[in-house]
Image (cartoon, rainbow, N blue to C red):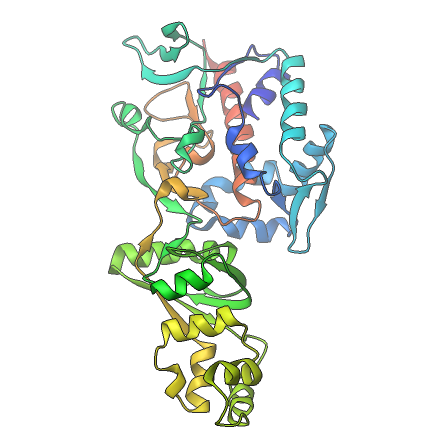
Length: 389
């Protein structure tokens, strides 16, 4: 995105890519449908960036979710709003957008050099690269680092750059998983029967609040959109206290009082599973989760059982490894960059995207801010180049 802005301004631009092809993480993000942005109001969208909002707001104001949709349309990629408010290309996949974008960049004269992995700075400040022809060095009037975070390192974002910038006096926070799954100590029987099963139409509560949605039982714990929505606060509680709990309401559409009445009406001769199915409408995976987290559930009276169904406490042991996370928290501290995304310790060197210390939930917010900060950093580069002697 920065390359496009710079090329439009008449600058000669070289884009270095470590991998054999560009946009691999974008393609991975679009594997099951490229969620490019969200259709909610811009005011609501800004709230999704938490503590980083003050430092991202100007960039997001300058390139909103609606601006991003129009930009896609300019590439010949129509978008639509899904039932959840998320925005996707009509074709769903990322590959048509990426092909059109690369063609546009080529037409603007942007030179792309693949298999060029940045190795840090040379003695004179030049950029060192590992290339198919051995190590090479290049110098430029202005540089943008868009090196990603630390999730999905096999796609290129491995955070190897952290010590190189630290050596230049650039402050950064350690990377942590964001939008991640959590490990739970499931019993073998529960894993064998229900690993991969979704829990739909539930709500989950943490320090963040209560949100509706669905998630999936995995062999090692829980994952999915509803878990990801709570992942930042759950991760922080785990770090601070060593344990955390996600509380799930298995029947959010039915009050506890009604559940208690419905359960009390069931004949005592029915098995516990049938009581849950007929009295509470619990499908097998929900009933099994209740029993997994409350082994005494079959001995509870209707009132206590209804309460248990409305508040199943899932004890979390730890986050899954950052390499599996959808995104990451941490990175270059905002105190280390100026309002134009230039590194204070390295005049002429800018940073954007996930390598900065911010996080956001899934729903199109991650890509929106990556695009917006890329454009904003390019604006800072142009300003720097115009001021250069």
